Length: 318
Ligand code: G3I
Image (cartoon, rainbow, N blue to C red):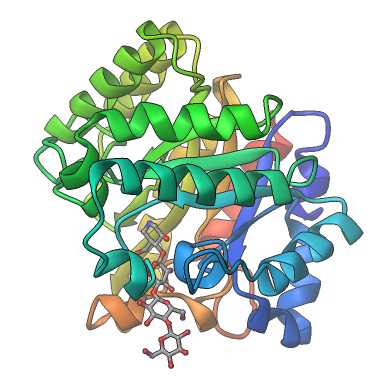
């Protein structure tokens, strides 16, 4: 089969993958990334602890390497993530800042980062995971200091720094018909109605083989987002299974990947099909979910799995 990025040529679809700079030292990784993908997302190195380890001290060198690789290989970069509650530096997590101070700190960070990547990073996950698993407000340092308004502020700061950037709210378990998906819909609808510069919603799609959101529910989600005039992105796809992988599980995984690819191919507003890594060799999954693995389209030897073949066929047949 032709590489994925060639198969989607002219379809206005980003086929992406997440990575760390260290992964580029693996020749097979770098080759597969450049051959198959037209978009990349820094898995960790654009998070606060990497970009602003000390207050006022910005270190862009690692993330710049990813942006350089993308530019050399004609790939789009998705920035991840301007505001989140994990991987923040100690000075931020443990600082006892006033509401005004926290707002200033947020504005400084977003302005510095978005300005630094203006013209190089077109898409930003502006706020990541503001909702808890029941669809309520996650009690993060941002929420506790600023209330729900921190979300609108983050988008406004990003837009001011780069009016051309496409700004997205990103979360997980928001694919199908869940209380959290409804809360995410209400959130972006309200932001839109307030005139906040938001352009899309990202759903991470960290899924589990055999526990699939109904395709009709995902489609319904996409359509109500479409009605708001927003884009709908699959931002962090991986579909984990229990170790050891069996042919049956790999085929079930391929079917689930195929469904997401079909939704991407069918709806114009769905223009990101990004997997959270390339090869199972470097996936976060086994470190975070004991006994689970094999979530990506390439195995640990970079061999194409049934999921890759299924996804490639969907886009080739479009
Ligand atoms: O870089 C340090 C290393 O110096 C240290 O020796 C090592 C041991 O403590 O930790 C390393 O940092 C780890 C980092 O990944 C880089 O590998 C952190 O401990 C570890 O917590 C961090 O995990 C990342 C996780 O986000 C938490 O930030 C995962 O790689 C990354 O895949 C995951 O990605 C998130 C998205 O950003 C948001 N959506 C969910 C997704 C999965 O959790």
